[in-house]
Image (cartoon, rainbow, N blue to C red; front, side, top):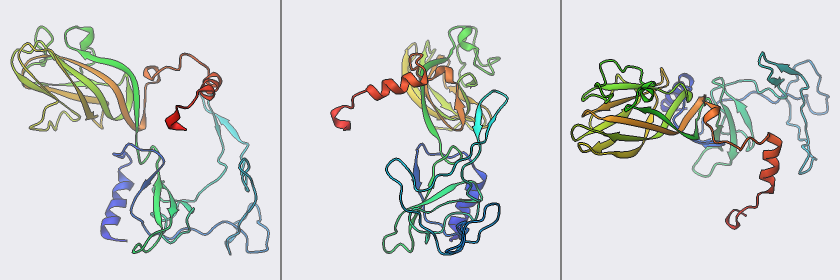
Length: 307
């Protein structure tokens, strides 16, 4: 394993919040670390329950069908948390070992590393590659998700009610509520997201006293220079779409005005990893129960291009 790969893995051990939006399996460079042996008895001997069974020659289970697997693991233990939500016991445990799955493992092999990431060998390597192609399974610990929401108006500096999500209004707004020239406000997103990674939205400026620009960014202590989220003229009402990261220490974003202006912010989607979006602002299913939703989806006819 190269020094670069070591540094990459060390960084992943420390930073659990990823910067990609994806699902399923994500391709990575192959990393070589020995994996633990399979838990089975030696050939011809029974597996002894309640004891460690040393692995010998791998055993293959054949059979099953399109609706039945050759091996079924079941844990019937169910525990209810204080909120009444039932959780089941594990049906399978992968012991965390190594810092990845070795590239010489067979295609279809699965492992769990000591950082809690699940790895899989998904395809054979091609020359000049030395081993098979190893990928990691996307989870909320190493990836994130784009969650569209019903559009929400977060701030509108033209009204007192529209300014309630501004964390630091004192000294940053004029008597009419406009964001002052050269000032920065922090906007609280707690009503919409918890541990957010990024936010998609629309920004509108109106009633500007002079031509200028507005900047939307994550960290109030690190305002980036030489960029604008929207440019405007004096007295102009103008909108623009924006995407920005969210302050990692608080669910807040910052807005800086180069000229005094009213600001309106609407949000339409959030990016989350280990966090979550307020369920009350998610697109509605019309109040249908889960069973009715499944039945309605089953009755839908695919368009010709999706068949």
